[in-house]
Amino acid sequence: MEKEILYKKVGAKIKSIRQAKGLSLMDVVGKIEGGIDKSNLSRIEAGRTNPTVHTLYRLSIALEVSLKELVDVDLS
Image (cartoon, rainbow, N blue to C red):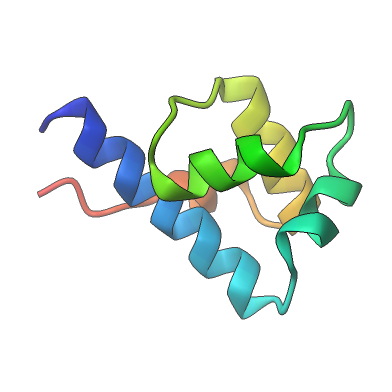
């Protein structure tokens, strides 16, 4: 699998979880420990950047899901 496809799948999963919880980008940005800007979160959700494991961990805390759930995507 090309890395860009993986980025898009993980980003789509993050966006789906955020929307299912009724949270806006700004809601999540406000909950992330250590801060992140809205444009960076938007790029992550669009699959245009490779978030670090630490950023994914902070997102999982903000979204109140496990890190495993956040990155559990179909790799086929």
